[in-house]
Length: 260
Image (cartoon, rainbow, N blue to C red; front, top):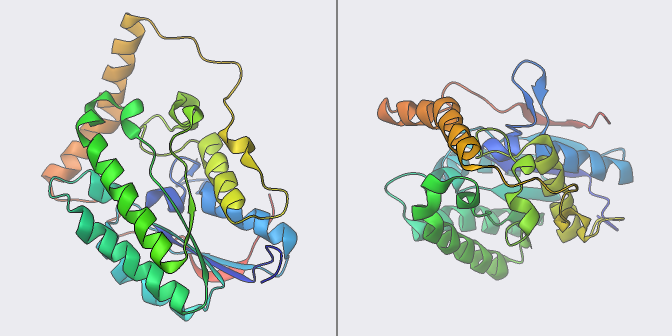
């Protein structure tokens, strides 16, 4: 690889990397990793790209199900994003979760790949019910940063910017990025990887600014979110189900990238 010209990119992770929120299961999911692959392919049209991510997966499942398959593809670039689903579970163990992430960092860097990862934004900015887990997000981000430092992994810091809490950056479920949000994530990773033409424009606020909703509108928004997002999520937890049950990777083989 020279000057951002990668030949084989593999993305591992959960729903964000799969692309949930950017397209749908009927028309197909795009997502930030696809968008990053398209950018990489503009530098090297011979790029091969695989996306092994599956929604709903916990960090240990991503390690178990995706690590060996990704290594077998001999990538020179890998992105690893794992831990968000663990953050939402009652038995949150940051050291254990970060341990699985670090094991993937170690394996990919030992194999000679450039590895990139992301820190998690504070979802409580848009989900008031998530405020009790704010401390969890900070703990896990700190551990991911430390593990990345130990293995020379590149970190895109996607939190800490006001634009991240803009509702237009998020899918209506408030857990997954919107198409605009996925593009900003791809741009953040491109900057972290120092790809040609990348800069910090992804951190800039959206214009025009949204007006503050009134009390009644805020209440209506919360009720709607609870009905379409929170309710189904709670029901899956109570039934011991995952959104990733019986799903497989959307792009299990390293293939040429079709430019959109």
